[in-house]
Image: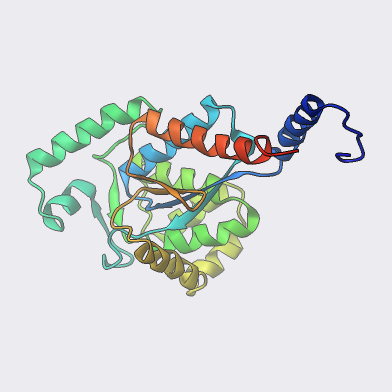
Length: 249
């Protein structure tokens, strides 16, 4: 007897198991945790690669994405911004010609994923307040929308996100309450959540982003080729199938 159905043949039982699996897959999901920073171009590309793989596999309802905060430069002064090229040359020591080469490579790669990188307009800033705002957005289930809008504002629109008013405007575009958002930014609310994510990253040995952790086991570090994302998602989907279908009945 399986869920009230009398099974007379083993093959019938397997068919029922497959039906049960298909039903359960609607509620049981693959967990993909992502550590990233808003000013990281590889994080933006990696985000698009993951989304593309999920869409290609028709697995939107089977994947639960959990974003985590990470800061590439937490010591950068708050309330200040400088052009990204200047930031890379002065603060990171990259030669100007090398910066141009890297940016052009990223522009070309971004075009493949409908990302309009405008590095000549991007303004580097301390992402701490943006991460606090993003942590708060989880309460309204707006974290994915805000993540995308913040990255677009930084990389494409050249918005100065060190300016509180600009952060509030971005929050408003995704339907978040600007008055509540202002309260978050005026204080230190959600700072602990940001730091907990960063602490967890250290515990996992994360030294760079993006970092993808699938079902707390498989890892994708960096914006790897598309096939890597697809293969890991396929493997995770198959694990559900093997667990729910390939077992004695």
